[in-house]
Structures are given as C-alpha cells and as structure tokens.
Image (tube, rainbow, N blue to C red; front, side, top):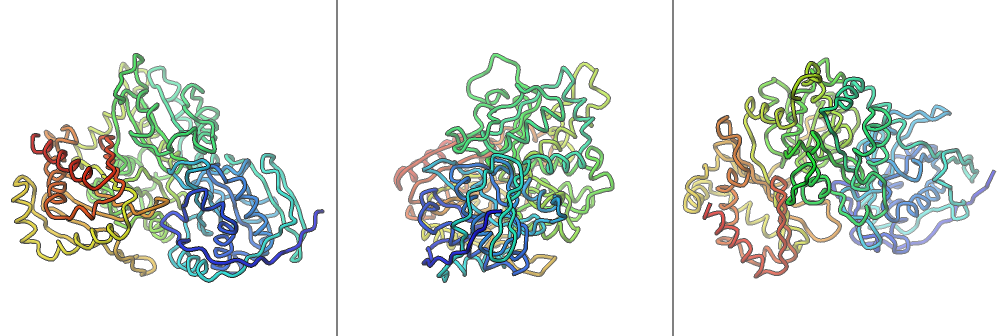
Length: 614
C-alpha cells in the first residue's frame, strides 16, 4: 500500500473568489494560477462541519471540460491531506450535475459508505477550452448546492486564507479505469473509488418513469427522435438511456461524445447555440430536405439544462415546466399519488402559477438558484419546479435535470399516444402545447441579456429602476405617453423572499413591474457569467383569449418590448448601457451584438422604430 505524507503550504488570498448562485466560475487562465484552485478547495473544507470532512466520503467529478482532469487530481490530494476517508470519482471524471446529486443521495459504497458532499467541476452552459471557462461548486449531503450560510463562509475564508494542506507525494490516480485505489496516510487509510458514471443515475430514472411505455413510443415507425448533447457530459447518459435502455437508433444522437472544449461550440441548449438540432427540427433559417423528427431535445455542458422541441415547434422552458406539472400525475408513475406542490424562479413566466391555481396545488415563487427549490423539497412542499433558463426538475434529486425533463416529455407523449400508436396520426408536441394554452392561457415570453456590462453602471441602472417604482401614478402616465396599448402597472417592487422552511430572507433578487392584465417586466443582475456583470430583462404578456394564443411572439410582445426600449432611450443615460452587449431572445432565438455606447444607443433606437412600425 502506498503511503503519503501531508504538506502544509503557505499561500495568500485571491480577490474575487465569491461563489455565485452556481459556484465559482472564472477563465481557465485564472484557475491555473498557482494556488488559485487550492485556496478555494481549502476554504471550502474549512467552511464545512468537521464530520463532513474528517472520515467522510466526497464525490469529485464534472462535465469533463478543459482543466477538469488536473483539478480532480489536485482535489484528491487535498482531500487526503484534510482527513477525508474516501473520494468517489466518475470514470474519466465524468458525472453530470444531476447524476452527482443522485450519487450523493442514492449510492452506497461496498463498505456501506454514503457521500456527505461533492465538488462538481463545471461552468454549466459556458464555453470550455484553454481560453474559456472553468468552474467549481460544492453540493451538500442532500445532493443540493451549498446554502448561502456555507458559501458565505467559503468566501470569508478565501479572504483570510494563509495555508492549505496537500498530499504532494500521493500518486495520480488513473481515473480512466474503474476500480479502487487504496493508500495510507497520517490519519489512516484513504481510498479513491473510480466507478461507472451512469449506473446509479439510470437506476434512479428507471424507478421514476415507465420505460416500457416510452420504449413502445420510440419503436413506433411514425415517431422519430433526436437528442443533441452539444458534446457535453449528457452524451454518455443519452447513449445508455435512449439507445441501450429504450432502443432508439444511434443515429438519433447528435454530438454525444464529450469533449473538453465542447467541440468548439457553446454548450447552451437554446435556439442560438443548438444550431444543428434546430436545423434538423425544421426551425433553422435554411430548410432541410428531410422531414423533421417528431421530437427533439438538447442539453448543456453538465446536463442539468434542457431544450424541448417538436417538429418545427419550440417549447419555452416556462411552458415546459407548466405542461409537465399539468400532466405528471397521469403520465409519470413517480407522481401517481399526486404532487406535493410546484415552484418556479421569480423571472420564470407565470404559466406554472395558472396550473397550480387550477389544480389546487401549493405554489412557491423563489429567487434564482436551485438551492431555494431544495429547501422546499427537503420539507416535502414541492414535487416539480423550473426556471426560465432551460432548467427543469423534481424532488428525485436536488438539482435541475435535463435528461429527466426529456424523459418526462417522452412519458407525456407516450401517455397521450398509448391508444394511438397504430392510428393514422400521433399526438405531437405542438398538439400538447396548443391544448395546454387552450386550457390555461398563454404566457408570451422573452429575455434580453446585456453581458459584460460595467458592474458600477449595472448597479446604477438597477437603482434607477427601483426609484422609478416610487410613484405608480407617474409611471403609469409615462407608460400611456409611450404606449397607450400597454396595461397599467398594478404593483412594482424589488423581489424579496422569505424561505417558508428556515425563515431566511433573500433581498435584492430582482426588480418587478406587475401589470393589471397579468403581464410582467422583470430586471435582474445575473451571477452565472465568468466576468463583468450581466443584466437580464424579462418581458411577459399573458393572454387567456384562446383566439389570440396563436400569435407570433414578437407581435404579442411588441407593446411591452417597445415600451421598455423607448424608456431606455428616453430616460436612462447612455452611460448605463456601456460595454459589450448581447441581447438574446429566448423565444425568438434572435441575437444582436453591439460594441460601444453609440452603437448600443442606435441599435435600441432602430429596434424601437421597427416596433413602432409593427
């Protein structure tokens, strides 16, 4: 047995190691600085209760992006030095974020051990490669992201850290081969268990869904299927579940070989970046000569996000979670006894609210960040939840789950077609969505992202938006001067959330303008980028007249969108919008880029002019 020693290394703090809603994300070049990763890992160990470190079992894996394999070896050596008893690593260091949550909650080691937490190496939907992004976050014993109490301690530790501990003489572990490596150190034995990355997760999915009914759907000649992993970690689960378990053709899978740089692409499952899938589904600018599949889906880098598509039809994430909730009890065995409740993030459209009201379900609106859903789930208050940024999940784990969402949709399609597989026409994704709108109304929805904005300017903008809320009469007068066809604001506030489970209060979670007709304008600073500030603007128009739910999204959102952009031009100084700017419409898949102040100014002006013409 190989013996190792523990070395104490002096270090100095790094600025800016504050974990965001999804951990710490920076450029690879930042993480590769001497001691940068070491400092954050040690600060995390120091923030955890002693029994979650000494003698504990910790999972270390991620989406396989560039620098992951180096990071795994560093964390293994630091875990050994800090008294961790064993480290579990997915083969090739690959585990999707939802699979990590499942492993923490479900896996039992050969010696009866259970994991107490995990270091997840991912920057989610951000690009990967030597000049792109890397990330790390810690998940707790419930399988969910560390709560603010822990992340605050981690950040506090990063600012004062003077030393870290590492077993420098511990040899690198071959993480490409399944098996157990045993070592011995000053505090006793230390093991590294490399295990199959898919087994535990697949077992969990088979306990939730009726795989036999899904298999019948996939074997129907009239049903065609396409899944795009965008060269992220979802690929290994797609091959195991869709092909090996459910019998789909291998040709149904796109980009399902995980790559460190995601094949040079951007692993974000939306209409902009999942170009190959979008084209194949008949939604691209260039028409395909082949008939599109009936169902398509995509995942992000770590497989926690998803995009759902029908033939020439896009399902918004807000609609997706609402439709899953509306059909879950009858279509998914796991929910056969009923839903405990449902929840959405504040920026997500209110489509789920309407379902909850009609089905008499408990409903919760929480800040952005999956940890808020986790509290509700741990307390038995929530079964299904989602967010507008292509995240959907349930209480089977404590992370959003992209593969789960795809299986949920396949289950709904299988249920709707159970007596129709030999008929002339299948019930399609579009049929299900249109039927949902007819019952619950439609929430037209889009989002604009202003990326890499100066942080000071972003805060100034948010402050002005708060000030605007001080007089609703004046605000409503301004609205009528700009767009007389926009409803009045009934309520305006800065969203604040009091957790019904632990009583904790989260302030400054976004600025809301709630209109009389159920429409909304929401502004939020995002913490998922690796540099600069990101301002997100959400525009939502509710329509419960079934004769108007089939309009083009751009047309339906034009009044609210043009009001926002005209207000930006007329009321806000150009200084607030300086920097690199990207506006991304999740609903329409449009993308605009501008570089400097003047170009931003004129881009907004021309956009407003076009809106006026409509």
